[in-house]
Image 1 (cartoon, rainbow over the protein chains, first blue to last red):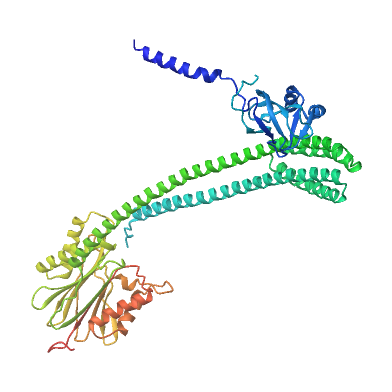
Image 2: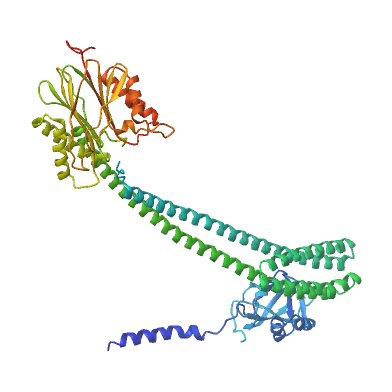
Length: 139
Length: 458
């Protein structure tokens, strides 16, 4: 009988910690959010990719490999407007990142690439206006 | 004579404690200086690292300047931008070399390697992007922007790595400084605690010492009052006396003289020198003084007094190395007949007019052997001066180290005053002057001057 309180505490702790341990990464932006592109690095322009896989490869690649991928990217000037079409949470990893970054699929709304779909890093976007009725993002 | 009983253990204890105190204080101070030097060195290193961090930011700015200049030239074809590009490139190279040198000297291997990569990338950008644009400024701007973005991203990553290593080194230094401060605080606290404890100990020791000295001083004062040699007045005679102890703080020592009236016209005169000085010797002189008085009250023969005293002394004093030289005289103050005996005491003089002669020794020193003593007598005349002293007079040393001896003593007596007390004072003053006031032995002087019949003169 003496072990019962300890068991209850153990169960309570397990129950409390399980959602945390199993919690999936969430995207910071959601489909429909209006964005402004702004690079988080020293150069505020943003590299936008034609594929989320190339986006991921670019950040994991060596200098030469990364250079080979450049034809698949365009530079969007800082301030370019876009809308979120989809988002893949924690998709891009790099030894230089402290934690995985989201890959955000956008539709460019201004500039020379207006109307074209691109993929950018989650840290390269600023939410201008969040959508009210959110739909779930891709995983 | 016997060596003084100096409180050596007290001096050693005091010196030892003082040395420990100074040592503890020294370590505490030295530790503080050492810590200060160590922290100053760390701060200097941190300052260098901060300088390198600033230089790195400046390097990134110059890189962007290069890219913007190139972009400007591509847009406007204005040679102003080419000059700006070259200035930025030159400054970049200089700055990069300076940082590389600093990182190399500080042994920051990773940061150094990353910076080399940074330089190589910059060089590649100049070859792959800048050089073609400078040759053909009509290149597509979007392509230049993309390449610029690529290179700046790459270099920002590398710079981030350098930054992290510098920041890490800075953290290590900061932690080291903190550890040094902690260690220093503990060590210094220890030394200060030790210093405090030693100071308390020292104070307790000093208090105890002071208390002991105070007790000793009180004892000495009591002894001084009890055993002081005093020249008491005698009928038809002028009596003078002086006493100087070799122990400057004491008024008693191993010498003693005594003037004592045995009857109406018979006075006992005695002077003795005990081997030794200080309080211990003073206690023995008291024994001598009162024993001689007691014997003299029964016996009127100076040789007999010395003989009986010799027996008493041998029985009373167990120390075989202790001996006494003594002169005892019985003076008839009516006729001035002086009967005396001398136990190895040769400092007895009679001055008549300006002539001084020494009274002979009539027996051995007391406490050494059992040999008979002889009494002698001499008739003093009015105006004569009987001068009795201890060997503090004859063995007084001049500045050249020569002893005064009997001849020197007799010369002093011959040149001195006719008045008993004045002569005693003059002799003491002369001995002090000769030895520069650093007496090696106690000195007792007793002067008796028979006066002309009809009363004292002056």
